[in-house]
Length: 294
Image (cartoon, rainbow, N blue to C red; front, side, top):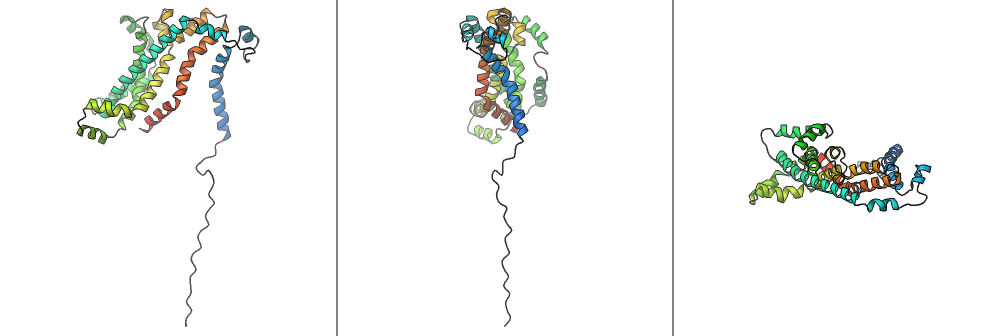
């Protein structure tokens, strides 16, 4: 009787041990060093100004880069008790809020048309807005000054708000068009079947879906308006109508000897923009990321 050969089952290949943190890449320590250096370069001047307002002039003269030996809160109290500071802060707030509202409303409407409709000259119009990014306000400050003067808007907040809206629209449209273009056309067709008009679809569907992009452009417009210096310098000539950047310059010229009070005024004028930007930092990054993906 012939023997039957039994074939042994194949031996499975050895499985390599699973590494922990397989998806994590090893980061070069030099990256952290460079990152901390950049953080120090950005935060250092801000911290110096804030701490400088908590020192006396004698302390600043003796040790310009030192910490306060005795905390002097009177500098900040003197600035906060000034009605001129609050007037200038109110002017900055009015310009920032009005600019933000104008940029958001006009930007969303223009972006909706450029993103959702096909018409002759659509690409040229989008390219025109994109080309606006290459022309900062400083380039057009002279013709802008002549135009505002001819319109009778000199020394008014409207002469600041309207140009800021115009120069913020290119960035707004570049960010919002990808958001609105990414909305599925099937959603618009379903809304039309349900009886929604184009305006109904815009207000009920487009605006809620584009909230991340709207928040991003709104924050950028507000911070840019709050920090605007060149345009108010040419348009405003009354101290009571100054915005805070101009107020800092005027205060520094008036109290040039009192360095501690100047630093206190400067820190109080920039803290609102820093706090506002820090609170909505994630929304800004998320909005820009969505715009790139779109």
